[in-house]
Image (cartoon, rainbow, N blue to C red):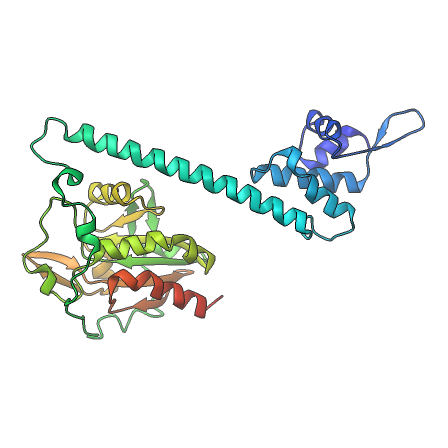
Length: 318
């Protein structure tokens, strides 16, 4: 076949094919008149180069994968050299992510400093009331009892009510698709420099929203690998508050806000009052194909709950 047909079937340009040839990655046959003659093996090689390049592997470093195919392996990554190339690419990507995360942290710190400049409110880093206060749970927290308030949830259809996430999208729990969605519901997240409701530590199941959220953050990738398609945190706090939590805690997932308690009223989710304010009781829903597949309730201790959900996902694979 001609180079134009190879390029069309492989999803690349003829210029890209010539570049691959210049690197010795593709070596076409030659017709009697000297024209290049490509075959199905060349199509497979070019498609492999394109797929690897889209994953971030430079074209010139796809050689181990192509040599693996040339050796007769069914897959380009069946060879030790291919797996070593994977590891090298992963290591480089990890370094880039860490560098970006460090830059992001510095930018957030600069933003916080700028936002508080000239203000009478002292940033948490300077006041010594940072997030660590919210991450450390008292040893004597009361354990919530199972009052049966979530017994009806398993097998119940997810409601079609629209919720707004912190990315500005409208989310319907009945339209999340066949993959499992984990929605952990909690009362409220504390904010440095802001007082929690009176007697918060003495209310069973109230304290620990920030440690719980950090747990889902830290185990986010594990949850995805165990079969979760999405993770959301949900509370009655407004969108601005939820956005602040996402930024301050560096969450890799979005949060949902239900200040009107539409979800609680539709599903009969348990709530409680503190300082005259209605709040969600802590529970977690696993939703699949518009149906609540599982409900965790009561949740305790909150700082270990993400691991509890992860264990359940691993024990109940699809």
